[in-house]
Image (spheres, rainbow, N blue to C red):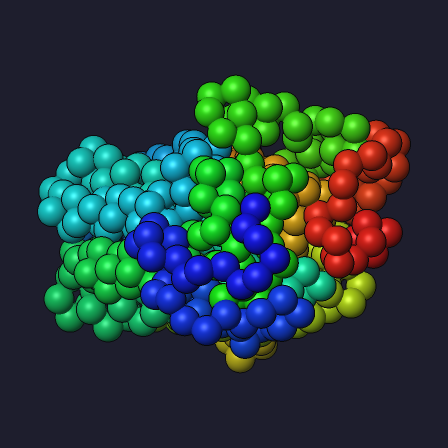
Length: 465
């Protein structure tokens, strides 16, 4: 560790932002970490745009005879995307402690941008599906990385709020994708929407490479304590200690995975996985199939695509509400309630209501739907200590991606058999199961023996979950 006095400025470019006056210990505020939140916000914005592009243009793709895409094939391709995301999340959650947050994050951005280019060039479902799988690899890696970085740099007692603010970008990106689907696709064709998906490689990747700081815990683990202390001081954080540093090497990666089942987490971990499965089934099932389900329910094409825009607008509001509420009452309580409200909203969407009322129900459902899943990540932040957090969140995200695989597949299967309306009942069931799973996490920690160190010295007690 560095001596008592202020550390020298970091000069190694891998340490992150250029040298500047340190924020200093005790000044750990949202203002001091705003640059990190802003950069991760931009990355997740493009993540949300890419994920929602497919659902936004699917009606146009199904109407394109030259592509030859069927509803069943569309659901399968949606599952290829999320299967790639599963692999990306599991691999990234482990590799990032070894290689560093920033290089892996930039690689993720380049991967899903390349996948979008492949989709834009494809003339058949097979190559298009390969492009979506490639995009999925990058998308799956990006989310747990940004979550881990924001949670690490945010003031501990405001981690849920920081997570909620970060995830507003996902829905802003989803709204942007929907706007592209409503404007570019009818005028120029669906391929131009996917060409827009190459923008992250041009816009976000250079900014992340130049400005995003590396994790102080990772720098310490790599034997660079002076740089770790410099980054921590610059952003007003507590200087990292060896307990915060992820273990290095292959044995360290295996130990980090096995630690997810230590006393205090051995039962909470599978419950977090199940809650994440349900949440991501809802998120990706609805994002992919809401326009088509609403179209099958009797709404026009323009209205059906507009519902995707409205539900993402509700998602932005929901993130702000959920983040503040979870910091006060605990992410577990908020997530469980939000899952229940999502189930109620899904059942209401199954009824053919007047158009104006339907818009209201879609918007309100969006308030609960997306933030229910995000609060699962905030709960994981409190379950796993700092050295295991990136791996823990990576696996919660990665295992949850099986739900993201199941959601589009389920919607496609129901659409192919003419049972689109059953999708609303299926999504409501997922909401009920997710509420039960996340609600049991505090009990599981007590049964398993809560012997692990708290997530951070100043974080809220686990009883506040």
